Image 1: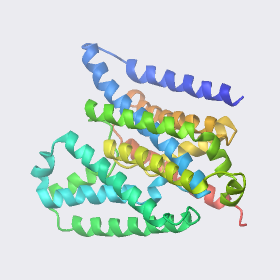
Image 2 (image 1 turned 180 degrees about the vertical axis):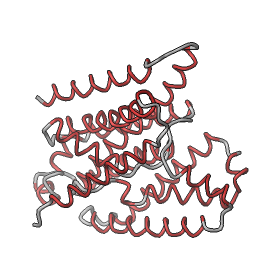
Image 3 (image 1 turned 135 degrees about the vertical axis):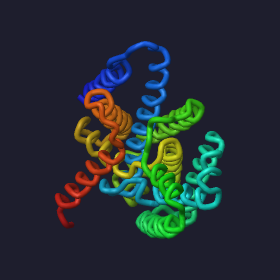
Image 4 (image 1 turned 135 degrees about the horizontal axis):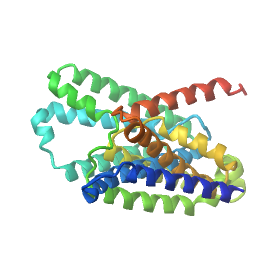
Length: 314
């Protein structure tokens, strides 16, 4: 049953991909297809990375209300953009080489994430809650610093920072997309290889260790994969905080199982489907240029509130 539902998700995504690429295609068809293909690649990659990373993070944290963005990925990205504009000015920021900036941002996000995970979990993975709370506090601190720095920017420079603070899929460099795709493919392959162990880890640290699982090592490996996927997706297009929550919740409802061998690909497909469907709706069917990330954040925020309010006290 789960395999059939996965196949239906893949078929639905394939239909949306064809609609996105071919809707009202006119001459010069080759040029238009190349532009659409780059945007489509970014939508697929970011959706898949965010969905799969959220499932991994929720398993490690033993909480289905959390997303990787809660530990400060988004806040660090916005802080980096603000610091660059403040240091270089609007003209200097615009003159930065795209590939070098992408690689530096990815490395910075991954380095910060692994420093946080490694420092706080070096004595064992039984203190994930402390790691998450530390990430939340660091995120608040970085948002505060970014907000303070933005107050001294010129209006034109502030507009640049604001534009960089929301995910945009319109101008994705093919070289950056290729590198991000390689990282995502490797991370997804690693996550699927860990799927049986993740099923055991979902039982809880004590039970997992009783069953012979090297739980602490698995948690660090899973968090490393989360850091890789979220870092490359955020550096590529910008932050989308609640997309992963939407993808993970809908994937669980779609496949009806918590087995990670099915849930991880389902979350990746669902995340990609959400972005492609949203972009197709706005851009192709309605002719609107609304920022997709804003709508996704709104829907994800509503889902988060619904999950919190529905959650029964222990």
